[in-house]
Image (cartoon, rainbow, N blue to C red; front, side):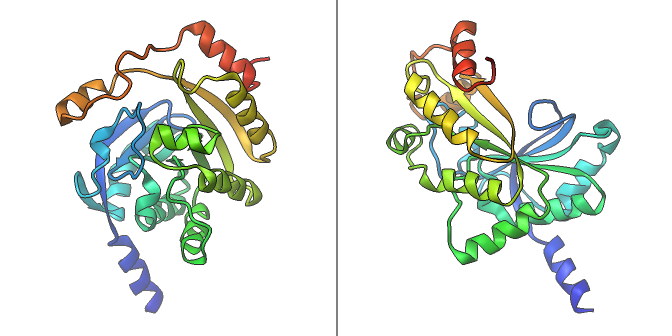
Length: 254
């Protein structure tokens, strides 16, 4: 009876969701149902979802309600698709994400966590919750915005020591990762930084894939709609040659 009560309580955990994507093709392997959660502490200068920053906005759903919405699309997922939870920053709603993923694993559904890692803390209370989450997580897609902590703070408002520590923690725990880096010419493309990022990634044991995400301005309308000055006004999207150079430095292409 106690176990049943605990499960019912967990299913009633609510989260705040910004948007849903029913046929995602770039947020993990295969076809994905993607839920973008509300709330993020970082203020990345190139953020294309500033409408997710507010922790109190969006739709409120229980974990069971979100899972049921996603599971209706299971026939599209085939063998390698599944559910991705993105943001915003999903680790700010860690209990909610854990419960969605727990329900997914009960049905054998592949789970992907798309995170920037900023809430990660090396303290027992947080790690207890984090360990429970990764127990139900098949893949973590981790953005590393900048390898140098001061540059990371200039770009996002926060330093990155805890984010790199999270990558190491996931590696030590045997959790599979995709590492992603947004490439902005004259901002996040310096050669020494990319080489240092490559050295950091190479010593991790569970990185299955490294991706360059070329900077784009598709989210610019959201900044304008929210009345927030866009800090990268005038920055250009990278050329194919600039992307290829970055991929060589990260040894994605040799």
